[in-house]
Each structure stands twice: as structure tokens, then as C-alpha cells.
Amino acid sequence: MVLGLGAALGAAVLFGVASILQAVGSRKVPTESELDPRRLGGFVVALLKQPAFLGALVLNLAGFALHFIALRLLPLYLAQAGIAASLVVTALLATRLMSDQLSWLEWSAVIGVCVGLGLLAVSAGSAGDSARHHGLTIGIIVGLVVIAVLGAVASRSQHGVSTALLGLLAGLGYAGVAISARLLQDGSIGELLRSPTTYTLPISGALAFILYSLALQRGSVTLATTPMIALQTITPAAVGVFVLDDAVRSGWWPGAITGFVLSAIGSVILVRFESVKD
Image 1 (cartoon, rainbow, N blue to C red):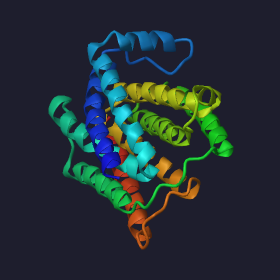
Image 2: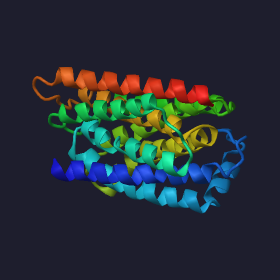
Image 3: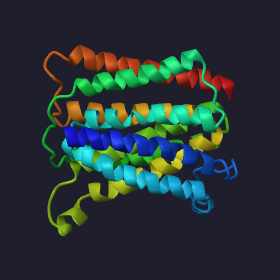
Image 4: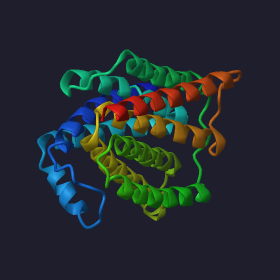
């Protein structure tokens, strides 16, 4: 438990710093960029030419290595709640380095999201057994198609609402990474190569990374990051509890529900007020 939570918190710091570098690199690419298969290659090449973006990529890969350890040792909602602390790192750095200005209400919302995710963390019981779950795997594949289609539509707009929507879709993509990592089976190389989750994991990560880059182009770092963090935390948490038998500590269901509500309300407040600014 201690090793897993330490890995999650280490990943949170790396992800928080990476978000700022990713924002710096993404904003140097033309803002007319969108999730269009005909232009995607050029968009990715343009991003990879930015040193800050390459730094973000390296930090994200290092963060994922720590995150993967947490996902294999902890219930999904505890692993995700741990890395959600990256929201605080991102918000603090954004106000100092990216000229993002947060009101007292928005700071309260950031704190509310973190407190809510913390409640989810302390409500954690034991992790359920990792097992093949064909229905869930199919759901991930279908979800990736839907996320890509909605992302293509949202990326056509430069409005603040599209920033929030792209961040939300990126969060769902990262949720697919977490769930796929949990479903991976220990076994031979051949078994891994035959497992669909071996492929849904990197595809989910790549799609989420691109969507988050598009979100960072269009609005504030906080507006892009908050719905992403909330969805990548809450979605695997629900899947872990209701599908994969992750346990909630005895008597802690009210705390888990309160944590969910605080996270959701804080995210809505940030999306509402930041989108008005844009």
C-alpha cells in the first residue's frame, strides 16, 4: 500500500510539471490545429519540434511508469486519487508561469476537487483481483472511437467550452489507460501480444495526450486540466468498485460519495468561470 501510494504521489508531481511544459509547447503550434486524421500527422510533428513539449513527453512517460506501479498495487480509485494531486501542482505553476489568474472561488474549487479526491483515497479498501473482462475491454474499444469522434468535433471550436470538453475527453482517454493497465494479465510475451488491452493502453494514452494538447491551446491550463483530472479519477474509480470488485472501507461509503460530489462540483465551478473568462 505504501509503495503504491508513494508511486502515485511521485507520478502526480511529474504530471503536474509536465502539464505546464505541454501547455508551453502546445501554444507555439498554430491554434487552428484540430483532431483531423488528414492533419494529425502534421500537428504531431509540429508538437515534437517544440523542446518544451518533448520535455513534457519525457516527464509523462516517467510519470506513467510510477503510475503503472500504483495501478497494479492499489484499488483504481486510490491510485487515481493519488495522482490527482497533480492538479494542485499545475494550478500553482500556472498562476506563476502562465499568467493564469484564479479568483478565491476558483481556488476554493481546486481545493474542493483535491479534498474530494482525498476522501475517495481514504475510503479505499482492498483491490479486487485483476481478471480478463471481455465486456469491459469491448467497452474501452467502443469508448475510444466515441472519444475520437467527439474530440474531432470539439477541436473545431476555439471557445472556452471546447477547452473544457477536450479536457474532459482527455480525462476519459486517460481513464482508459488506467483500466487497461488494471486488466493486463501477468504472463508470457505471447499472451500479452494476444491481449487487446496491450493495445488499448497505448492508444488510449496517445489519444488523451493529443486531446489535452488541443485543450491547452484553446484556454487556461486550469480549465483544461480540472475536468481531465476529475474524469480520469472518477471513471476508473466507478469501474473498479462496480465492475472489478475494488472494495470501499466498511462504513466509508458516505465519505466516498461526498468525495465524488465535491470533485464534481469543483470541476463544474472551474469550467463555468474559466469558460466565461475566455
